[in-house]
Length: 222
Image 1 (cartoon, rainbow, N blue to C red):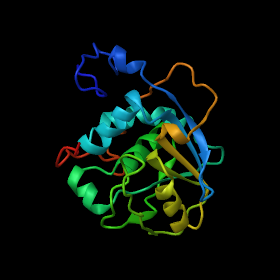
Image 2 (cartoon, rainbow, N blue to C red):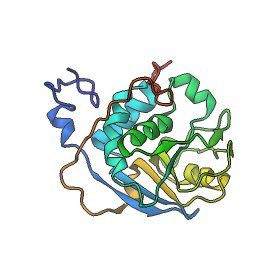
Image 3 (cartoon, rainbow, N blue to C red):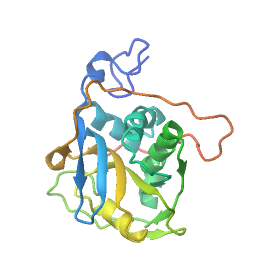
Image 4 (cartoon, rainbow, N blue to C red):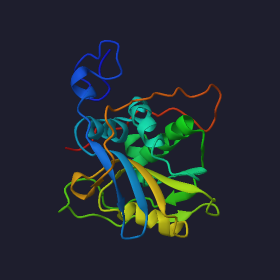
């Protein structure tokens, strides 16, 4: 069995190969300028970064399942609804996946919380991933439904915080979010996680809201 993180070494029947299983760094909690409080189990480095990339650019559903358990453990008390921060339509078509939606569905299965697709994205904006010095577009969202009570935003990674800030503004200023990873330069350390616990939760049969990830349309640019 090939390791889902590095896609190179054998995992020998385990979820991850031995090298990838120990290459996690604890994430952090940060308050964005928008006021959103974001919890992230991992830094955007090592195995966690590779899993995020596998999800975003290779439409690998296993990556979402591996990240969801640790994310679910950081959900705040009083959380009722998970609201994914949607990918721009053009990128969703290009890569065949909406990573925040897949993460939200997996976190929902791990936590028992329902997923509400309360946000609609724009068609396109300049890419936000990449070096901090890169030109970054400003995402735009609109609310599809009335902001649900007890909502927590879900996304794959937080860097500058602009995307989560825009999503929160569209929903009337929600103040809580959970992401799989956080940029190393901006995280405030959480209580050490100790050994990283990876939990895979299989989707129930016949659940229409928990669809599988489609195959990617193209590989990521380097």
